Every structure is written in structure tokens, then in C-alpha cells.
Image 1 (tube, rainbow over the protein chains, first blue to last red):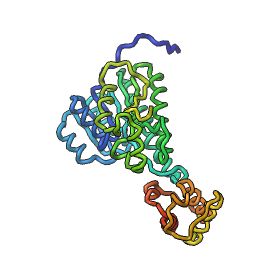
Image 2: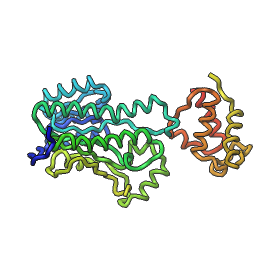
Image 3: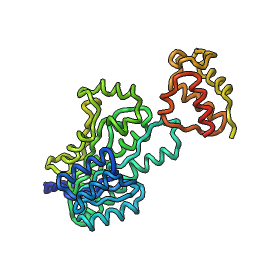
Image 4: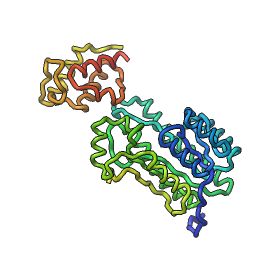
Length: 252
Length: 83
């Protein structure tokens, strides 16, 4: 079978976006931003926080939220079906759900390593497979944005398994972009350390060191990542298979 | 589960340091930076305790960041065995 490329129609902007891990932090900021941009958003997380519930209440026609553990594929499938019945076919996915790590590799329980890999690597691959199968079966085009991390490209102690999963998602991003032949655009956004949340796993000394080495002199804020995610979901750019680092040049 | 006493852990800590040509002070208040006992040395000590007890000792990093003295090391590992 020929895989030769023929000029394809541009992938239209996503209009119904599935966001995993949308209840707090960057995920919540992404959901908020997409709703403010008049998109329809299906967001799930292990726990629907009051903030996410409030967003859903404010946009009853365009938001569908639910409590789903991303590692529970059956529950994720049911959520996607329910979301599509309510909002229409999903043509955008943001794989954001992840668990962090704060332990040296030799002192990390094997069960914890397995849990990190299941949540941060296996689950988004499964969710992506589910979404892409639905897109292809219905003859639709779409866009996928994987939220990875600077940890995939630079080494940080205490984040070995976490970094491995994020590196895995960066690699999957490239291969998926090739595999899907321009019918689905697949990109990753790799933030640097946020001042809150994931940065809680670093000591103050490490945080101070990162800030000193960052040309912009600041840690990344979710609000600075959100426009990049929106661009990849909405704009006509021909960006595909890329990992876009948002870290103030700390890693260069 | 076999559990090492504080004194036994202190002996193991002394061995870790001795292998590097360093000495373990008798004073529990001794600062680890002055002793030259680093985070990987702590890992080595924890793994030695594991070998002796046959039980894995898994823990997150924040606890390690609060450790500043010889006594902190011993207290941490004694407590960890009981968890």
C-alpha cells in the first residue's frame, strides 16, 4: 500500500475538545481558555473540583465534565461516548492528566513506578487511540496536543520514571504525526517547571537555581502555556509532530 | 520484620563514610555538610539497611530535604523501618 503523500486539505480548527486532567492547574486553565474561546469542551479528572463544576455550570451547552480516572479505559470510553452525544464529535484531544514524582529512583516502590507509567504513558496512548479511531471511522480530521515536560529533555533528580513517561509521549507524538499522515495533527507542549504544583516536588535550592538559569528570570505559569495549546488546536500553522518547549529558555 | 536499632544504623553509617576515607563524628548534632555525607551516601546507607532487614525502604524526597544532621539520618531510618 502506498504511503506517498499527496497535498492534503488543511486540518480544520478543533471545535469539540477532550481534555484529560482538567480539574486543576494547567488542565483547568486549558478548559477555561477553550470555553472562553467559544469551543465545546469535554473535560474529566479523577475528581471534579468545584472550579471545574463551576465552569460546567457557566457553560451548560458547551461543557461536559465528569469524574473519570484516566487509567480506567472503560470509564474513559463511556465518558467520550456521552460527551459526543451531548457536544458532537470530538475533533481535538489534550492529553494533560498525569501524576508527578518526588523520589529517587532507587527508593521508589516498584508499584509507584508502574502507576506513574500507567497514568502518564499507557493511559494517554489508550485515550489517543480511542479518539483517533473515532475520528478516522467517521472520516473526520482532528488535532492532538500532548502535555509533556521539560523533564523529557533535561535531567532532574527525583523524576526518573516521570521523565521517562514524558519522553515516551514526546516520541509517540512524532510517530503518531507520521502515522496519521497529516489527517490528524499531533504535537506536544513541554512546559518548564511551574511555580506551583509540580514545582512542589523540587527543593527551594533547585527552584532558585532554575530561576537563575532562566533568561526570562521566571518559572513558567499555566497562563503562558495555554495560548500555545490553543494555537495548536485552532490555528492553521502546519506545525506537526513537534514538541514546543515553554520554559523561558531555561533549557537551552 | 527484622529491625535495626539506631546504634546498628549508626555503625552502618560509619562504614559508608569509612569507605570514602571519612569519619563519622560521635556527636549526633554534627552537620552532614561538614561530615561530607551526601544524598547518595544516604541512599547507600538506606540500601544497606534494606540488605540487613530484607525489607525495601521506599520514601519520597521531601523527607530527605529536612535531614541536616547525623541524628536526623538515624531518626529518619529508624522511623522508616516502622512504617
